[in-house]
Every structure is written in structure tokens, then in C-alpha cells.
Image (cartoon, rainbow over all chains, first blue to last red; front, side):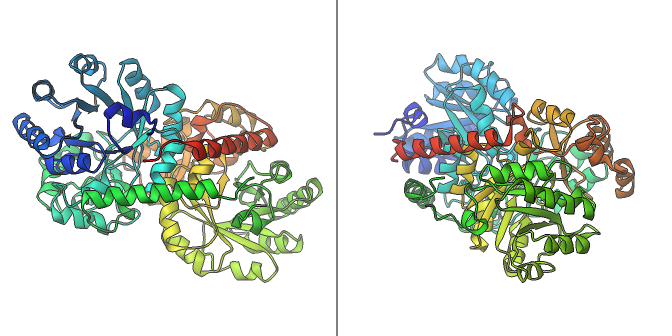
Length: 318
Length: 318
């Protein structure tokens, strides 16, 4: 039917990939996205290895469609996790935050398709050279971990397109059908969406966090911890403490001290809106409702089709 | 021929507006853009009132096409400048950095079309209520002065579209025909481009600055002075001094002291690449060549038409 390189690569129906987000992307979200025609990804970043195994097995029971696992390569359990992924017969892996050379070939030799997430075209070139099957280019708008260059999606997609001909997935700031078509027009083959799936009924995010995302406006998030690892957060009490410390020139050690432990779990999974870490993208300002995954994807694709029609009939023949 | 609200409003051929930038946008750039079918804007922000009068008169001699003046409303000479604009028969004014209520009706009563530049949807609503003829929504990618919310163009255009039905001009990060079509798809009627015209042959930017913009890569610019007035700059020696002071928690007074006087003129107009202030957008990373305005605009429109054709024939019927 279609000749899209990403839907062909992953054998999915729609050019929509759900970001494998910590504390939000368990088997229920993953299987719901895959069952709705997109590609669901389990977020291994917040799971003990055996918890991940359980989520893989539950996803396999809940869907016969393709799905994958996202794993940040800097995590200490990476080796164990890769072993489980191979043992459990996962066919698609998205890697991030680390060197794509380390695992790409190892996984591909087991018949696994590998995509790697980057925030700039230099890392995109490295991913290309490592032989990944696809590149995810994620802009400054994105929630969670983010690039130091602060390059936005509108710039990043054309920049990556200039240096690599690989199948390309745009990420960061995308939650609507118009944004999907816009980024495809910039050179992406498909998109990865995170925030919009955090506020799905099936995400494992705490309902308090989902409601806070729905309430978010322009300027509700900011890019914190630029000196350590940039991460986009909602400005709650914890984040304001962090931001004030940063503005006053806190050292890395002081910031790590404020950060403390288990903030992300506390915020996103346990629903502590004041002292937890609430990672979400700028596009939260456009989200208005918690919806089932199927409705989210149907709405995106409807808007995509309508905007394609509009552009085809646009009278702007300049 | 076309039914575009911005080209109709300003009686221009193409949906391209050239940003009225300090030290770069004199009569030569303005008239070249207008003569090529776009809307040229004189940048009044760096001109003494009588210098502006001279540039208006020279533009009138150099083109019979519509052109305008951009004026930041917070400048002390605003009253004098508005008087000159009215006396000299300027028909289009773009205002920024101030309250759109103050001047919109005054100018419209003299038959002048007024557009106002905003960086968030709250200010867009104020501009709408002030009765402006068009809104320019400028994202985080943009060079020069910028919004505190750091909302990127990919988010800002849909957000502004939600609260206002006014003719809408997208700005920030746009320099190519694909980016033009992408932002129109998001809800803009036209675009304003700055950086790409800085590196035109006709811009009054110093050739050293133009060459520095061509050399810029991802991460070459950053958003400085967030505590005072956020502004996007190239990281040269001056900017690094500023950035280090900011990271160490400098007070506003200390930052103003580092800033000093005449930095922008020194950098952009006099070509001091180390100690001058070099305002440019993230899209500088995509710019590769100094070109005449006509070629810049022709290349953008060619890519726009090609990408329209591609989208019309795209087989992605998901």
C-alpha cells in the first residue's frame, strides 16, 4: 500500500512510534499502541531486568503486532537487559544515551532491528556509521533527557537529513496530525511521540501526573540540569528549587544533592506533584484530555489526513 | 490568483517577510526583498530617527513595491519614529517588545497596516484584542530577542492558532522552502525570516559577521541573558564570558556590566567577532553561502514548490 521506510522496517501500519519513557511505558501502553497500528516501546530505563522480562512477556500476550524495547545505554544493567531482550525474542530495540557502536551489530546479528536516539547531527552521523536501521532525532522541545545544543525539531530534522540517508524518525514536540505531516515534510519518515501517550489511559504514569500534564501551559516546563544532563521538567516545587540553585550558580555537587534519589519515580509513578521529578515535553501545553490510546492515534491520523487534503487543495500557487 | 491572507493584506506576491533586524536591515536589504516579491522591513531598532527617515526615502526610491518598518516599542525614540513613519507615508509597521494597544489604532487611523511580534499565546491574545492586522509568532529558535517560555516554533504556531483567528506569520528557525510549507501546515499564513537575510549580499551586516554565520553549527548559538531580556547569540569570546558569569550565578547588575555598551553594533555592523554581540538564529547551522536576495528567495520558493508537489504525490495513505 504505502512505501514508507519506517512502517516497512518495523512492519507496522502507521508512522507513529510511542517513546519508551521511564515510569510511563509498561506493557499496557506498549501493547495498546501496537494494537492500534503504531509501534509500542517498553521503557526499560525504569525497570529492574526481571521486571522488564515480565513486561515483555505480558506485551507478547497482549498483542501479536510488532513492539520494541527502549534502553538508555548508560544504565548499569545494560548487559543483563540485552540478554533478556534476546532471550525473550524481542525484535526491535531503540537505544539512547550511549555509543551506538557497542550494541548495534550484536543485536542485529540476532535478527533485531535497531534504532538509536540522537539530539544532534554529529551523533546522527555516529549512529549512521554504526549501521543502525533507523535514527530518531529528538529536538529541544522533548520531555526528559535532552541535547546540550538545544537544537529544536524544526532545525534538527533538516540538519540530520543533510548528513544521513537512513530512515529517520522525528521526535520532540509532536502530538498532532499536523505536526506529524510537518515533520515528515522536513525530511522525517515517521515520528516518535512521548507526552501525548503519557496522558493516555493505558500509560502507567500516576493519575496526578497525567492531570498535571493536562494543566501545563507554555513555560510550564524548562530545561533543567544543563551542567549535568539536560532534562525537561515541569516547574513544580522541586524544579523551582533546582532552577533557583542553578540561577545562583550552584556547583554540580550541590545540584546532585538537591536532585537526591528516586525523584522521577516519586513524581511520575507515585504522583508527588511537589517534590517529584515530572518529565514532560513542551507539547504538554497542547494536550487537553486523558484519552484511550486508540482514540489518541485515531485523532492524530484523522488530522493528518485532513491536513494532507488541505495542502493538496491549497490555492497558494506562489 | 491565490487567496493567502498575508499576501493579500500587504499586497505582496510571496508569503515571505524579511525580519527588520538591527544593524542588518537597511534600505538596500529592504528594497531588494520587496523587489523580489517578499515584504522588506527596515529595522528601526538600530537607527536614530533621522537615519530611519533617510532609509525610508531611499527605499521608496529603490522600489515601488510595498515595504514596512519594524520598531521595538520599548525604544526611547518611539514617538519620534512613529511621527516620521506617518510623515514619510510608510504603509506597513511591525511592532515588537511592548504593548500593542499603545500604537495599533493610532497607526491604523493613518491607513497603516500593523503587525505585532509575540513569543507566546498570551501576548498573541493581547495583540488580537488590540486589533492588529496580523500576528507574528516567533519561536525559541529565533536570533536576537526572544521569549521567556522558550516555546519553539513547532509548538508556538498551533498554540497561537488555538487562541486567535488573525492572519498569522511564523518566525524563528525558518530559512528553507520545506520549513516554509511546514509552518504553513501548522497554521501560519506566511513566514518571517531573519538569519537567511543577514547573509544576503544586500544586508548591512559586516562581512565578518556574515562569514561567522555561515560557519555556525548546531550549538554555536545560545539563549543568553535569561534573567534580563533573553537574546540568542553566537558563542564568541564575549558571549562565553557572559555564559560563564551566568553559570556562576552573576547578578543582573554584573551581567549588565559585562554587556556594556554598543556590543551589538560592534559585532554585527563593525565586524568585531570576539567582543561584539552577534545575534543570529539556530537556523544559521543550515546556511552555507552568502547570496543575493533574489537568489535566496528564488531558492526558497523553488524548494517550496517541489515539496508541495512531493506531498501531493506522496503514497503515504495511512
